[in-house]
Amino acid sequence: MSINIVLLEPEIPQNTGNIARTCAATGSKLHLIRPLGFSLENKYLKRAGLDYWNLLDIYYYDSFEEFKQKNDSNKFFYATTKSSNSYTDMSFSNGCYIIFGKETKGIPEEILNENKEKAMRIPMIKNENARSLNLSNSVNIIAYEALRQINFPNMI
Image (cartoon, rainbow, N blue to C red; front, side, top):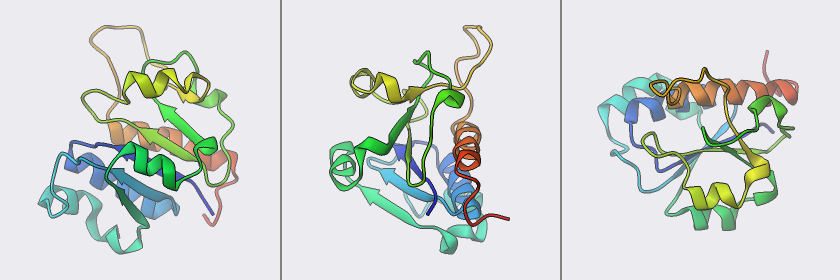
């Protein structure tokens, strides 16, 4: 088993392709929640994921509600810039779901407000012009911390 990376309404195909490649290389499952801001046939999506698509466990959902119904919400974590919790304060477990919002808006506030104890951020300098990291970079940072905590299952 490993971890689950969840993209809630991703908008940029290159980010999703890079994240798919990370998931394939780490044995993590990728969950995509519609609407997607691109076609799955997008050349940038395919190029960013290179030839890793066949190594990937990928799941699609039509809404966040459908995603919640089909997965264990007790294992959900929410990545956001709007939390005082650091991702390093979280206790990740095998099979956990790390949810990332769309590039332009993040995870909706109503979801974050209902899950404050499971919301986390990546520490950054205080500067109004440095609002957030790139989505694929954020996924990598948090995914590798979660994988570290569960001893890098099936990884060499």
